[in-house]
Amino acid sequence: MTTGNKYDWRARLGLIASSLLLAGLASGCAQDMDDLEQKVAKLEARPGGKIEPIPEMKPLPKYAYSVPADVRTPFMLPEDDSVERADGLTPDVDRPKEPLEQFPLDALAMRGIITREENTFALIRDGNGVIHEVAPGEHMGRNYGEVIEIGETSVTLEEIVPDGQGGWRKQTTVVKSQSGRS
Image (tube, rainbow, N blue to C red):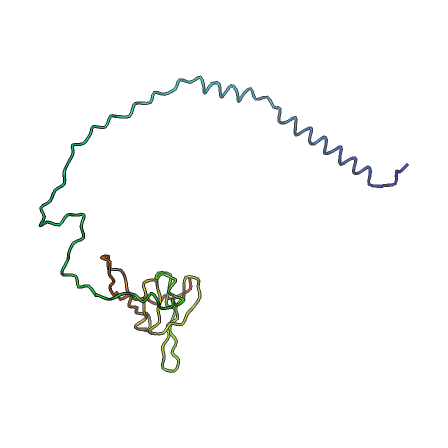
């Protein structure tokens, strides 16, 4: 005798199986926890350790720093007349940045050169693995480095770097060719 739906017995069987499974899982939550309670009671019964007090600090004697007026203090910048400052040397911050100026020099690598119509271009791989053609006069690196020479195995840059005293100085840097892939 059927009631019209041949899948009724499967639905009922699934409901009964789910009910039995839930009852089994719920009974696992009510386990005896006597062993855990005994372990915690044993740990709490142990005597606590004694913590030694923090040692008392003796105050240091006061010291007044004084220096003669003709002697430089270590808290002032030295007035070094031997350093020639390139007055007026500043990077051109209004110039539009070129693509390779977003990478530090250690992320750039020379991969080779190309000569076209008497013009030599260096092939430079950037930090993202993209190869760029660079000609003399173009810029690369974060220190306003201008390409001044392209050799067979290196590119020479003239960078404008901070001099540590609030000014700028020129510095020559070489990016050498790297053979192989990376």
